Length: 419
Image 1 (tube, one colour):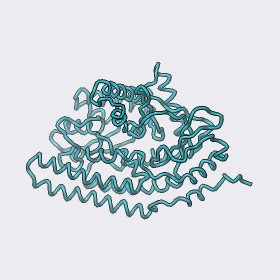
Image 2 (cartoon, one colour):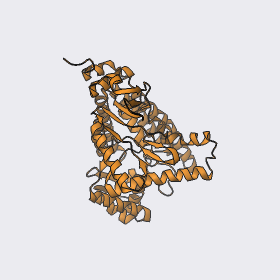
Image 3 (cartoon, one colour):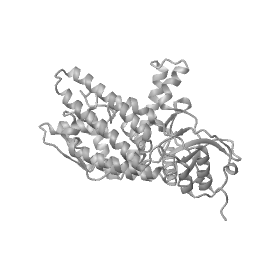
Image 4 (cartoon, helix red, strand yellow):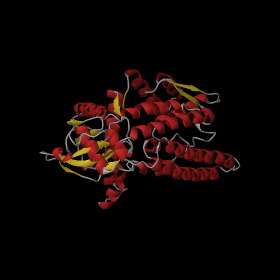
């Protein structure tokens, strides 16, 4: 006979009421995606009648702001995978500034799973009653993201706090529906507007996100990166939470609690303490944070090859003394030596302004390009800056993926193998 906490996970799923079921999500996605897409297509025709470059720039900015509001509403309303999309495209090097400004606030805005369901998942996964395991468990989550939410708690007999990550029941099926819709849209886009191989990108996303539903894999990745960074430095450049090993299952992950503030709240915290945000103290703190993240990622990507692959603002905490903590190891990548070397060559090519070396690095990375434009090498180099650098290419004020002058429109990109 099963104990009372050993319930069927399908029964837990039935307790949840999602705003949209799979067919409804598909319908909502296509209605909204078509609205955003046609808005840009109509705008392209309109902006071509304006000859003044400054007026064109202002018109593009307004169009991006309008689209950003619609993309935000779609991602917020549908949640799930679309929160991941917001995290991915809400970066200054990947999207227009108006999109970034709007989408960056969606880091931890997923609707939380009700606590009675969280309790059922925990007891089902751990095989014990919640009161038998935890001395204290905060009902309100610290945050809720696309796949899981996290609660602060304290284990019985312990003096320090832990974070308990609990997967939203039933979310995997909904996210796979979202990904398949996006793949169809990506195929259409690359055949009609953008020559970039968007479909291969979405297939890689499907594979990577599929891994995120197994928290035992995430725990292993966290321990591997923690061990590497702590052993490779006298002082680790970033803090990595310690896994509580006997408290890990596919749907539950318990780890050390690290006290800090989200990097997005850093400006408010500086102002609250009466520190001049443009003064020397704030500048030194920001420089230390940047150095810590740069060193950590440089070592992970180029020295180890195994790295944290989801560095959006919601996963970065700023701790006492401007120390940085890196959270959420659901998405990691393992680069073989050949790709690490190719990536290093591309970084050097961009840093040295060498278009020929950059085009050679494309091939080494397994990226094929096709172009008929006159200044092919320069367009390839501009595309490399757009894809791999964190600042816009010289002379580019904002990313315009639908513009005829965009490198993505001029150069066809076929990803031969994902990495």
